[in-house]
Amino acid sequence: MAYDDTNIFAGILRGEIPAVRVYEDDRTLAMLDIMPQSVGHTLVLPKSAAENIFDIDPDSAASVIRTTRLVACAIRSAFQPEGMLLQQFNGAVAGQTVFHFHMHIVPRYENQPLRGHSHNAVDSELLEQHAEKIRSALTLIPDSS
Ligand code: 5GP
Image 1 (cartoon, protein in one colour):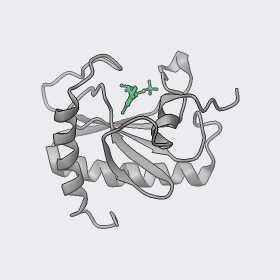
Image 2 (image 1 turned 120 degrees about the horizontal axis):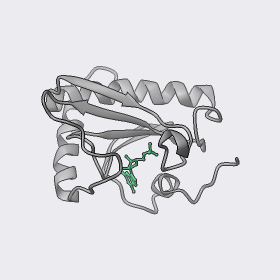
Image 3 (image 1 turned 90 degrees about the vertical axis):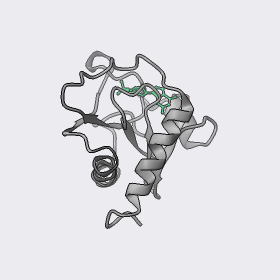
Image 4 (image 1 turned 30 degrees about the vertical axis):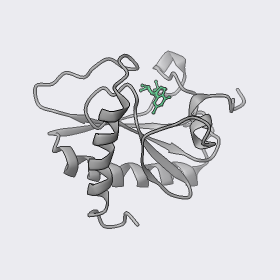
């Protein structure tokens, strides 16, 4: 199926819809998930139009992984989770709800079950506080320039 640029992440990338951004470069954007499954849940998007793992160009995929690693390091430093889950869904039947490729970075905390996927929106002020911690941590990670 052809990429549909009316999806919400395409709107965010065009600057039409607000997002709590934590990192951005020429090829990728990292922003907090508005319905986080845990504190620090972040999404990494390619700026190129791609719906899933099957149509993303390899260079954009590599850039997403590079940003994912960088932001995951910052999240670990900011919130000290005991683990970090990376997830990426392809197709509605696999759980994809927004049809612009994205990687989930989901910090895992000991004895804290994950909240549901796409369930409870969090107050934007709280998200902004979390984002500020991640942005600060990013300045201390090598290769974040
Ligand atoms: P998917 O199921 O497609 O992998 O996940 C989409 C994710 O995007 C969900 O975790 C959901 O909470 C998140 N999400 C949905 N709408 C928005 C939005 O407008 N802004 C942000 N930052 N995240 C969103």
